[in-house]
Amino acid sequence: MGSRSRQPHQEQLVGPNDHTLTSIEICAGAGGQAIGLHQAGFKHLALVEIDPHAAATLEANIKRLEEWSWEQSYCDVFSGDVNKFVPIPTEEVPDSGLRKPVGFLGGPLRRGDLDLLAGGVPCPPFSHAGKQLGKDDERDLFPRMLDLVDKLHPRAVMIENVRGIKDAKFEDYRTYIEARLQGGRAKHPETGIEEDFAGFGYEVCEWEVLEASDFGVPQLRPRAVLVAIRKDVLGDLKFVWPTVMGEPKSVFDALSESMENRYRPYLEKGGEFAGVARKCLDGWKQKASRAAVEKKDGGVAPTLVGGSKKHGGADLGPSRAKAAWKQLGVSGMGVANGYEEGEKKRSQGRDLFGPDGPMLTVEQAAIIQGFPDDWEFTGGKTARYRQVGNAFPPPVARVVGEAIADVLRAARERDEQAEK
Image (cartoon, rainbow, N blue to C red; front, top):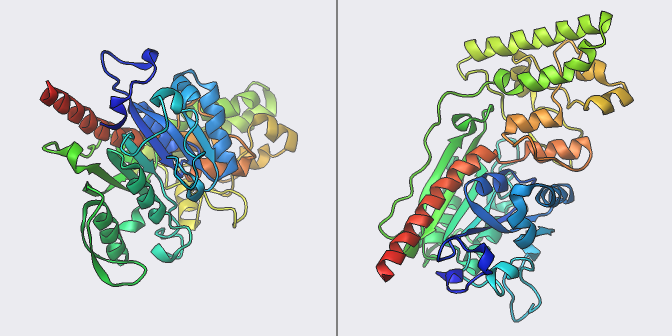
């Protein structure tokens, strides 16, 4: 079982054998998927992210948060191009490979050591908001993900993308990816010629579209997730996709406390300020609570849009999204400053007291995305908002991670019983 034959340091053992589930994540962003997989029980050997602000966010939170103490010792945050990420030393680059994980693994990472390779590869090639160039888009990193699957040969693979990849126009490309993983006939994306691929030895557990609002996230955010598990690991076991968890959580329920906190300094001033603040806060409560009761979706938010460096400042998306936010009592025309910054820049008239309602702060956008309260983002306001808006909601990553972990643990238990 790969690294199970190499004994990590004794203090990291759980019982008589090491049952730590290890993972590497590419295109990690600001940690949405990493948080969810961490909550599901995976320990990260490496997080790879090209955006320097997002990489700094990963490093800062790992260093600061006690629950990430394992990663403080054994996780590399690779800030750079994933095409230059070399997790296993090679003859051509013998000094490559991971650094911190050596302390846990007892040596360099080897092919087959890893439990899970995950990644939210860039979505513009398949996004309805983009040009939908698919494999012709330079931002398509599926080839790099497949290359890493071949090199690392992890026990399981998880790939997250936008729902658009499930569109009919990308069927040939999806078939090609599946053929590379599990074998089969498919058109090569470069030549358009059908080929028979031997595969890497995986069984693809379908592409499933999961709606974030089904898993406690107060947002409509459908994501396509591919899970593949190595055939020798899966054996007679079955991967079971997570199912809907209760009623949707509304924006009203999610943001009530933070909205109260934002208006409190002005309510406490008394006089005219307090009157205006009370009117604005009550106006938001009325619209958001009504939406929670009357709207078919339960008053959840539209999909947050992170945008890109090629476009201007952060806002909450196109006209349709802004209209949906307005029904929730929120202005989607921009992202608000926090209290101190708002006072300094005198932006509170726009941020909190506008005619269409308050704008969201970055911290409130993170609540809408399902981030834990103690996860902090680095960089300026626009950089921080983009990290939030482009993230995979942690609660969704968690339930998928738990489903994968269930299979990996069951497989390990089965194999240990067979050895006995």
